[in-house]
Length: 82
Image (cartoon, rainbow, N blue to C red; front, side, top):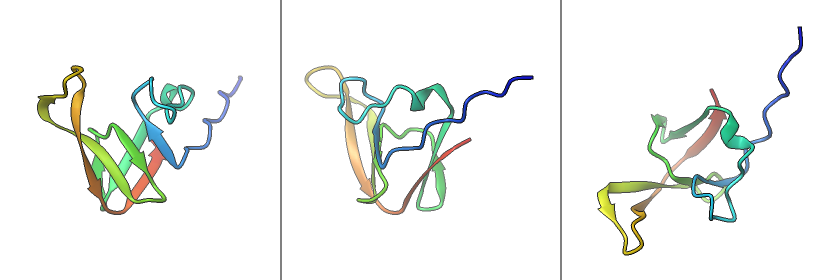
């Protein structure tokens, strides 16, 4: 019986956008959870644990390039593997 390799350590700053310099594809091969102010969030597009913020889409609003418009929320951020 072979064991799967352990997941990589979660970075301090991570983005779901593949064009971002903070995007790490190896991390997204596993299920990631974000807890913001003691509530699990599933709509997080980017986070930074050390600075204490997350970016979430603002409804169905798009910017001029067709990407979701993101709101920056500040608070306590925890990232973990599920």
